[in-house]
Image (cartoon, rainbow, N blue to C red; front, side):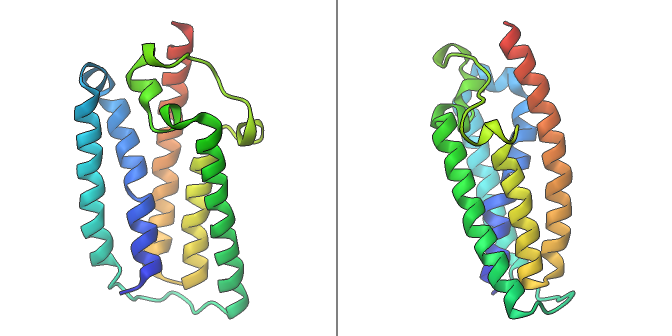
Length: 171
């Protein structure tokens, strides 16, 4: 089993699906946020099995040289720090969608501190770059397909989130 494939798919794969489901059924989730988190947990569990299955997919598009593997590993570690910085800047209630689900529980405002001074969606940017770095660091075909799919889905999520955020801030 290839651990890079497993962890990349397991950690990053559910994120756009959960966000798309959030925005597709936002009215339902706001009435019952616990159902959203239960659904998100179910999606994550399904990705555990999907990632485990795909981790056995050893199709190699190319064999990366050692310097590229090291560079990609360094990039992935640094990008995880960017994600942590995003969480610390937003605080968990915003980062883990509570501000979207329970509007009255968190002051609604646009964040422009920390990494948000440089990127509108630093964690999403990090997810996409991590997926591509995992591909370039392993040469595995499944990770190239995943990185492309993740990029497309995250663009949809960004569009949905920007639209929802504008509506929320206008209330």
